Length: 474
Image (cartoon, rainbow, N blue to C red):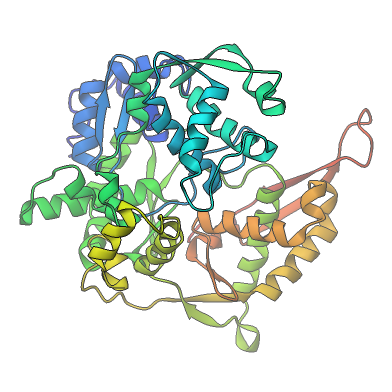
């Protein structure tokens, strides 16, 4: 029997699980973020949360009077949870750089700071970084900087006391904004488990056991493997057995995994022949919902149905089978992309030159050393085939798509495939994509274009899709 939430009565279990989902969905909680009730909910259960989150997942919860900060144990690099701009778009590297430099600059200010003064401080640091800079005379630079400041404002690290950041971004000569600085929240925002100046690769952040000070030994290794398996199921749409090394595979199949996760989160664990998934039908824990609304999600769903139908073909029309990149290979590719942003000169570059790790060891995933994963092959569809299917989808249902994406099919296809990959339905590879087992849920999808009410011009239409999921088996 699971020992999770031992101190919680059956009548209060749902409230406790709500607090668990809150802190897992929002690793930083403040008096106003994500809403005014969240911090009180988490603080009520803080002691039990601290115990269970460490025991089950290896996460450490740090609470203060005005913050609850979850220090996650990280096993991989996740590109599906970016910081978002005011327009809801993912941060680019420039915005992430401005965010970090803003945090550093705020540490040198008092209780308040003017936006123009803060921008000048960030610009002075940015100009020393090759390829970055911040020119407040350029509107794109001002917009990127204000996106970083707004991200901090939404979490309560900064509070607007007077003026408008949007007006400043429009014309800094005529407008200004004044902010109060909350140092407690600032400290919670930037709470690394390592001395960042000593990192020579982003993968150094993934040594979660060492980062959180966990003990060594065989019993501790088994405990850490169990935690890693639970994290894999919790943080991914599906944990495929084919991706797991031998030790992790045993933990994924263990009955205790489902018992612990279900009691901790209030969600249901579903096991299939190819893997295990935590099912969140309410969307209260998931950061991405699929199927969903919007052009990209609708196009992705229709594309998933066509890929799934193609997988069913046999004989000479059957798709070619190819191996998917291993977990270590996917981690290596992501790490290389992140590490290209490391400074080419300065202390970090000097440390990297001294370390000189070989590529295989530098990008090896924790716990993967010496493992030879069995090769599993998946149906392969080419880029040209995908472009052809999207063209058919657009011709049939394009009246319900956003005009800018309908007119840019390459961008629409790229975003739709990114969404399918984020949901573990496909794996993107050179020249196309591989259909993964979970895609079988979408082998039957119906769709129709429904014209809106007469009060709306008839040219404006909405696409409706119904996932009939005739066979839910992955």
